[in-house]
Image (cartoon, rainbow, N blue to C red; front, top):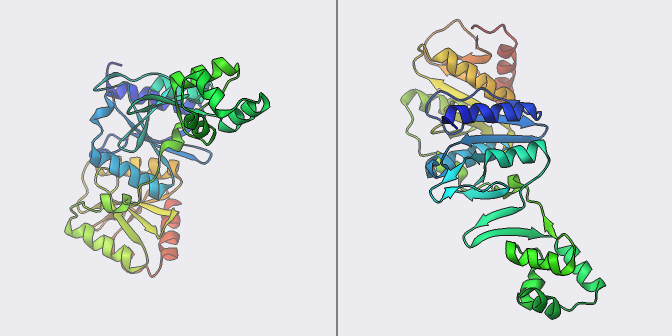
Length: 325
């Protein structure tokens, strides 16, 4: 790839060609993710880097937070790490985020050919169909010890393979060769993500402006929990408890400038793909109530709100108004 921008564009085309609704590329800074994409119930929050080691812990924390409150899966795409090129057909995990090459993602989405190996500290591991392994062993009247001796592992290892423990690539190949049966199960890379319990706290360290604090307090007073974001195209997620479907992507702008319409357009694109509401709260007096598809509110609007349902009604009303370009 000549540049990261070209890699991002390649990924956006791939996703669109395989049935995903794809957001605009996030070009406003700071940036924790580059694009979001949805197909049916699968929402992906993608960060795309040439070298995956460039993913910082702070950005990874934010990706996990966004995934938790938007009901999605973060995914890091890259071509190499500090140790060299990433292997195709292998799923990795870095800072709690699943990692694939673009070629591996293409195989998964276009050919329905998922990766079969996962990188681990000791090398590559594979998942075995433990139930099938036990069935074959018992049908052939093989004891745990006999099978273990034949493939060069311990009796306990065979027992644990049958119970779902992963195996090294070498052990799996020896098992398949000895039994003459396929046993390696494909890996769903999206299942490698486990939302962190501390996701909300990890993003709450953002330094907020006085105006942001005012807006956040107003939202909290009508029943929302507010999770500030640090490196996203919006400034907070306003949600109700653990209900991910209620999350509102909230941009807070003490001052509007030439970049405001571009940010509003991007926010509208992300809200559409994530199937969430978005809004932009501005401090100065404006006549615009829908900018580039994003509802625009002022503190006086929030001051009249008494509960989350009223805010939802106001956002829906302003989304229907003709947008100002």
